[in-house]
Image (cartoon, rainbow, N blue to C red; front, side, top):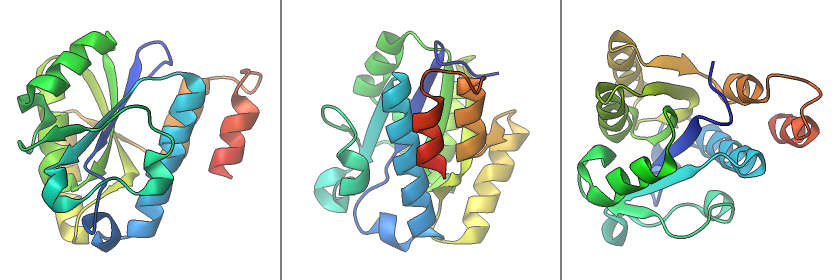
Length: 178
C-alpha cells in the first residue's frame, strides 16, 4: 500500500491546448486538480512537469493555482532524462510514485517506465491520464501493466493514503472527491 510518508505525486505535462483536446479532457483535468489539492493537504510532495512550455503552453489555472513554485520544464519525453527532475526525485526521498498526466502512451508511459526501472514503486492514476485517442491511452496502460506498474484511480489512491476514516484530513479529502 502507498503511504503518505513514502508517496510522491508526479504530474506529467497537463498543459496548453493539449489538455483540452485529449480524450475525456474535462474529467482528466478535474481529477488531476483533485489529486493536487489532496496531496497539498496531506503534505505529499508533488513533482510538476511541463513539456516544452514555450511552445505547448502552461498548466491550466485550476491545477496550477494549487501548485508551489515553477514546473520542471523538459524536452525529453521521459522526465527521468532531465537533470532537474532527477535532482528533485532524489531530494524528495520518496520511494512510491503516483503518476498522472498526458499523454498516457508517450510521456506518462516513458516516465513511469523509467521510475519503475529504478526500483521505485509506481502506480498510474487511470482516470487522471489521457491521450488524444482512447486507443493510445489503452495501449499505454497495457504496456505499463506489463511492466508491473499498477493501475489506480483518483479515489482509490486517496483513500489508500488516508487508510482510516478518522484521519485528520479525511473530511477535507472527502469534499474533494464528492
